[in-house]
Image 1 (cartoon, rainbow, N blue to C red):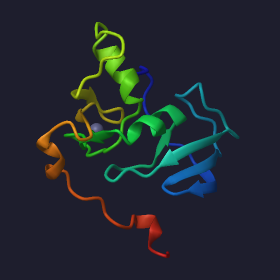
Image 2 (cartoon, rainbow, N blue to C red):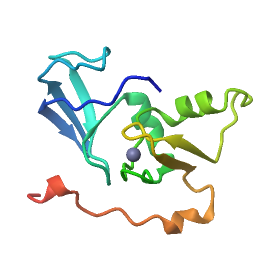
Image 3 (cartoon, rainbow, N blue to C red):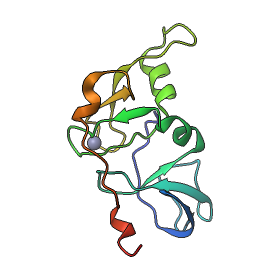
Amino acid sequence: MTDRRPEAVWVRIVASELDIFTGEVLNQPQQLTSVKQGDRIQFIVPDSGEHALMVRPKYLKERMAWIIHPCDKCGLSELFDAPSDLMAKVFPNLPPGSMMETFTAFCGSCGGVQVVELAGAGAAEEEVAPRASKKWWQFWK
Ligand SMILES: [Zn+2]
């Protein structure tokens, strides 16, 4: 939701749990002011998209409840912000406690369009390709 541009930084992986990695930031970010060199951040590797992506606990907590369709331009299959935060920004007049079943958001990486759908809300679930059983970094397991 920020007007700052996305940025790639180097991290040293210090821990991993399931699909969530913890890394120590090795260089000083130029765009982000909320992360600095030496900080530990969590990141995931999207099913599709060019880079790993920093995530926050709120995003990880909400993520399971949503189907995030890949960006129509770059293919990124994750959001830069938690769905509830995006919804609140796009639909400021939603009554408290209510929730959209489907909404669109601009891709944090390239500005393309992503459709975000509440899991189990519609028939579109069958259209979503099944997740690969192993991700690219799991080849040695
Ligand atoms: Zn994109």
